[in-house]
Length: 297
Image (cartoon, rainbow, N blue to C red):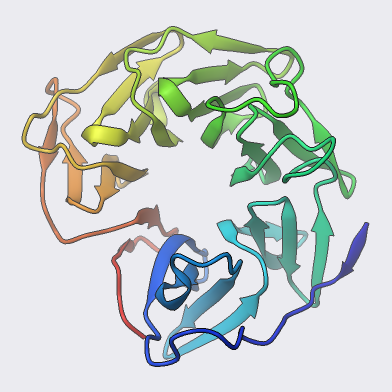
């Protein structure tokens, strides 16, 4: 079901003096627009579910607020029209294009018959995919969200397994990663679990040219693979949790609170190039690399 998106007023019991935000995810569009999913630090430690959605297009910032916890954001161009899509942890979907519409992934979120929170919205061959904490994977097809997770999805109520992120080169070459180092591959027909070289939680994954795929996670772990063969890239000097990974101009970058690193593809390790704290990292098709850090507004 698709409805117009609704926004609500800020909850009354908050620290109005603290306007700082915690950045969660974002994107840079082909036209140079920056979008950021953020959560107010004033709400930390409360049960308040909230999203501040920032946008920046030279020279102006803007923002919108939603009463759910945002998790992921992508920009999509279809038939000449560009829109951005926001994912909430309970399966809320907001499409912002010529008008703003909201829809719900039917069995995502918590409660009877639901599989749990979702974590990542991915754009693969210009189609939308979502993954979540019971190894559920959805694809948006003809305005409906359908499961493509047969054979691996966990039972309702299962805990301590699930996906944090996904990426792919095509509909027949998709990777999903998550808790306890799980790595799965989809060939367009079925999912196969890969023998992972780590038990650390994996937070993000990216597919790069040459058939390689990189994933990052807790303890500064970086894993690299091609098909069923995966390896850990060691670097004892970079041990902070990593939250994001992307490729830009033929190089692979990873980001975490401890800093940003560039992967050296010629060595069995990654070169730590600390440029400041970062929660996520993205690339732009206008050939500018943005590193987004915790920041006060």
